[in-house]
Image 1 (cartoon, rainbow, N blue to C red):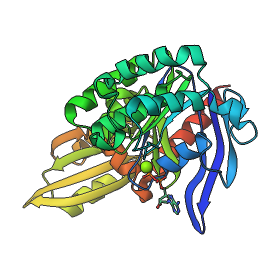
Image 2: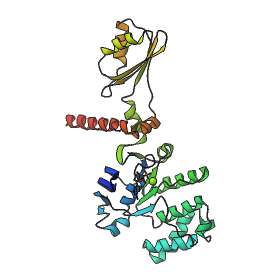
Image 3: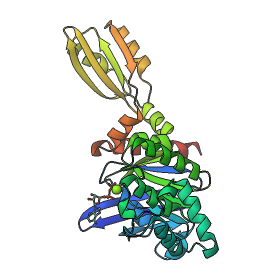
Image 4: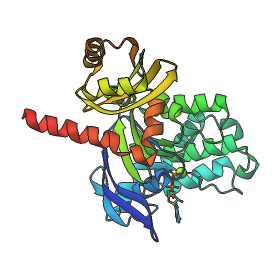
Length: 330
Ligand code: ADP
Ligand code: MG
């Protein structure tokens, strides 16, 4: 189990990580999702003990990464953004060296190395110098190094960068197969990738955790406060009048579409379903509604909205509300 508590990382005046907290359970695939510069690599470097934090704590299976680095690091295999490869070594020599560093027992080294080379499909290049390998192969050698010794937790920073589509599919399959026995954490700035591979997504933006949930729940939670779109046969001013008296509309934007037809987008308060009220209000005022529909929010939209700063509070507000409701039930 991994626990990250109140992590802060400052580079001079710049806060790269801003009070990040989360927990990760065994045997799942977690995805850090966020645009470039969000703080994914910094977080992973701190979790693996490569970088010190300004504040906060990281516990790996109960061991503090700063106070008991050796014990904590035993549980982790890490593929950094720039894998630490030695260009003048052959693939076999490098993995031999990595196995020794990781303390893989001597009698097990040969078989462990064979196994990871097989899994990452690099057996055919094992005698080649790393400097002569393509980017895709180098990435796989880095991955082989990360899973060598099969630690409980495997942390991969943008593992598919620089790979071709066929290699990406192979690496994803490998990641899935690893998750049967290991906890896997990967980072990506590509939504499709985390959605495809991960059981759980942590969306990071500007060093903050803006949402964390399963891909399905993230979509669902956004949908529960989804916007309602209407088209009416009336002038904009008339539409605004009708809207004024409808309860539970938090925000509305009204636009003239063509002569005599007005479009409006309505955001409900507190995730309420306002469709019925909207329909009845317009009917009562004898203003014809031509369409009334809810806008489907895809995970794409969730990601885009959440990683733009002004919308960050949205899911956080929703989460706080859920907590309050839960407290109320007790
Ligand atoms: P990501 O991996 O999500 O792209 P990073 O963790 O690499 O993001 O970077 C997070 C922020 O910290 C960025 O604004 C980046 O410019 C800054 N940063 C990263 N490393 C350093 C460093 N060594 N010195 C100063 N700023 C850094
Ligand atoms: Mg990065």
